[in-house]
Length: 286
Image (cartoon, rainbow, N blue to C red; front, side, top):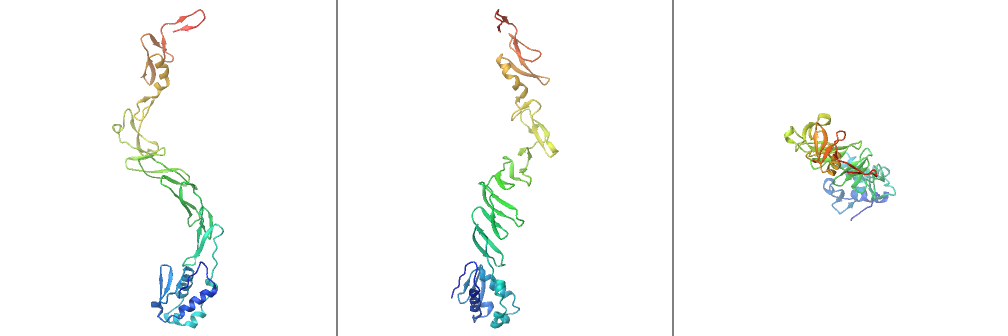
């Protein structure tokens, strides 16, 4: 004999199942076995989870094997009303069942997850692999590689090549876990230094904000990966080059070194031609 059920069983089927169990001639401990969520008896009885919960819960109230084998008393103590229970997870549920402890479990449709006893909307965006609610009812996003939960969505989280991981805290601030010899700086894991000799070009080793680590920095008025670009010269370079001049820094000030036929203007440092030709029309020729 084999009995299989859906999610919820009628009182009649439960009673028939228990009555069949009571007819087993084998001792209880040899005739009935719990295995992988199914109740299996020697005679081929197989009942799904809802009945497993019913029968297992019933057996635990027995004080001895003799009480279990007392067919009449066993049936008399069987409280159907406390065992039969409805199972409804709402319109966004694909399935509903009771686990072995009688807890309602919901299989929700796409975009929904179980919250308490029903299916609630749970969407973390197209960068997520899944979404569920924790025991406190908070949304938990399962994000794809390179993305992390920021508030209620999966957002890109990149701390650079020197990082081991990246995440956002509860306030949405990016937190970088950096490899050895790297530390977080401006949202990126940046290589640290111990002295100027660890830095390239004109860079110098200076303590970063907060004093947690030292980083290579360009001296004032220099920029670029190796601090090879002078920012002051960059600002006047077009004017210098238009006169065929080059830019030089003297006492932290940029000047144009002019060609012989031109001279620097003391106020601006730009090259001006030494000679000017004035036409009667008012046009000045250099």
